[in-house]
Length: 226
Ligand SMILES: Nc1ncnc2c1ncn2[C@@H]1O[C@H](COP(=O)(O)OP(=O)(O)OP(=O)(O)O)[C@@H](O)[C@H]1O
Image 1: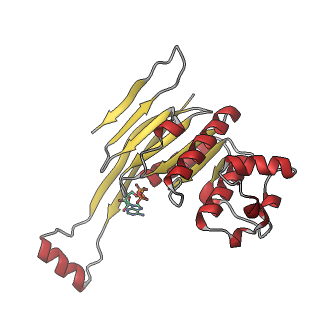
Image 2: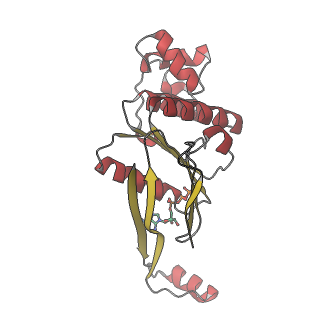
């Protein structure tokens, strides 16, 4: 069990251009420097095999929380693979994962790619959604302790996003990986079956629900800060 303690706040200062001054005057906005906090000494208990589902409205601080959590995990010596940092080689898809064709097709199908024509194409010839699923396959194959995906499934249709969410969470749990996603979509709870569900609200408000299905550890509300 590792408890990560996270704090993040920003100082904002506004550049006083003529248009900024006009808008400020029209709407009666003050232009003094302000500080806003996304979370302050937030304590999160994240374990191997946890599926962490971070959701909340756009701009509420989900990406920042995912990034800060990943940075703390890296500091802690864990190997974190970030979907947004996965680079794709210019080779047919079937060459990019697995030790052989059987393994490659298995990994690709878990990531939602099961069309043989896609296997033969190169990443540059795929759609955004197909490339995204290929990256998910590479994340699953990477020798990492933690998989992270910001804007998880944003370029996929909802049916595909849910199916990929279900498969990835299942594989992560089976392999003892920590799988953490952030997205505005809050319709994947059933598929991800998260052990840690985080709803990031505006300002420093955050709700964390931890549900680990162990007898000695019943579902509990860890923190609900206002
Ligand atoms: N460098 C920065 N300086 C000041 N404010 C910042 C900075 N980076 C992010 N923010 C602010 O922090 C807040 C949270 O940003 P974040 O990217 O985590 O939001 P998000 O919930 O992931 O949004 P989205 O769903 O739109 O991606 C936003 O209001 C954003 O404007």
